[in-house]
Amino acid sequence: MKVAIVGLSSVGKSTLFHLLTGAAAPLHAGRPEARLGVARVPDARVEALAEMYHPRKKTHATVEYVDVPGVVKGEGSALVDLPALRGIDALVHVVRAFESDVVPHPDGSVDPLRDARMLELELILADLATVDRRLERLDASIKKAHRPEDAAERILFLKLKEALEAERPLRELDLPEEDRRRLRGYALLSEKPMLLAVNMGEEGIRNAAALLESSGIAAHASRPGLAVCPVSATIEAEMAQLAPEDARAFLEDLGLAEPGLDRVIRTSYALLGLISFLTAGEDECRAWTIRKGTRAHQAAGAIHSDIERGFIRAEVVAFEDLMAAGSIAGCREKGTLRLEGKEYVVRDGDVINFRFNV
Image 1 (spheres, rainbow, N blue to C red):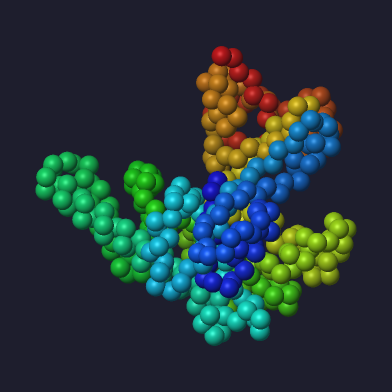
Image 2: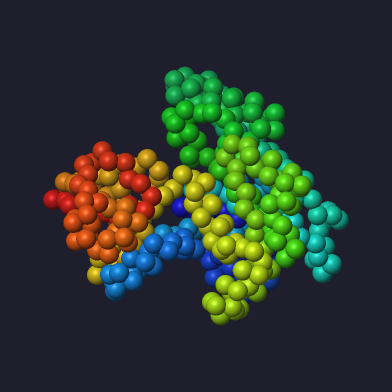
């Protein structure tokens, strides 16, 4: 999964990227460039399986993040041409909700809803330029070649143009899967699911739910394809310098159940309808990423195409049942280990051993 982190200038975007991925700041000054980094999806189940099996290796699911240079009002169209944004699955829009005398807001005041709407409009205008260019090419091709597929694509792009001119993001359109597939080759940014990571100060994060409500961000994020997650880059940076027990005490003092970074990663993971199944053994305990609704033989393909091709059956146990029984042998005794065929729909947290023959 590849997620782009976008936002206006001075919102804490690059700080959040560094905290998520551990990627170092750029060594050279000058024009900012997109940067890539990888974050582990926090999953206590992998750690618990490692405690049980003592494997040589443990592997979490990962998310690839792209740190995109800050967007300036009126220049969102430049995003479309960034090679690093090709093939992204979702966007994280870092929205500023903190005051700072040291780093004043470029617009003179902090207004999360205004900023969220402004960047959304930049994405819409960027997409409109892309759609207009594509329609010009389609019109020329239809005049010359009269291909039915061009005519069908033109109908789709006229529908996109109508929505964009009404300042409606493409993620809100109810398009059939065939049309969604047609659009995968285009960098249409307003079509991507978006997580609003609202970057707050310490007082804000203590009362995050109230701030999201009063600012209007909660209502804005209730629209299709959007989600919201409060975070404080400043607090996360402070916690990164603490010992684990001190960091936990700091979280408790703030009334938080988990670090904001974990919420950002998990929420962006869930926004795309992704889940994890697990494999466990002495060699490796690992979380594998699949889409919700994936069947057993397709999940096997996430490990290796040969396993999918030679699929015989899947030995499946829910993670909670494995923990309760203490071992696979214990699951067999309790009857919680199941044999499933290729049509079984894998659930989040299933621990699976695939039987196959090639």
